[in-house]
Length: 158
Image (cartoon, rainbow, N blue to C red; front, side):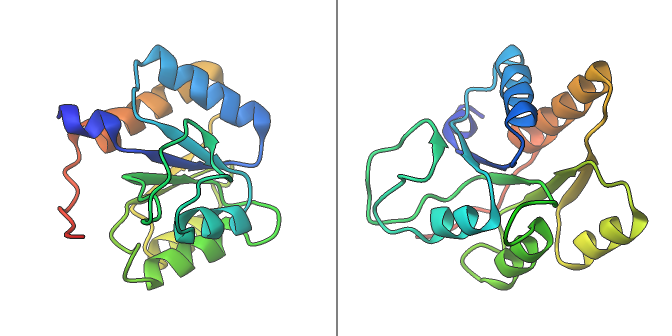
């Protein structure tokens, strides 16, 4: 389990307020995983496909390397400026380099069409952002407990 504490988490969130709240809650939950942030779809693609630079990551920096950063899980907002979350989900799940990375949609949309579309495109989970602070805390705790602690991802060979 200790190894999982160092695996990076990629949060795709355009709202500064929502991201700060997420960071605050994860800190309170003692999450030690490096958290990287992208604010739009273009940044996500640049972040994942980059070679040797993590200039667009907003969070803790890793040393430069020749391999693009591989997050252990992606927390993805749907409604983003530019390339939206639905398109990012579709692109990443179509790409054999990234399709095994769990993508959990984290959005305000509880529209059944969005939920169905995301699962059809390969989402591994779908969480609706509650407006209530206590409910948000419960939702983030459930995410942390399952995706960062309990879930066993496949071991990928480099």
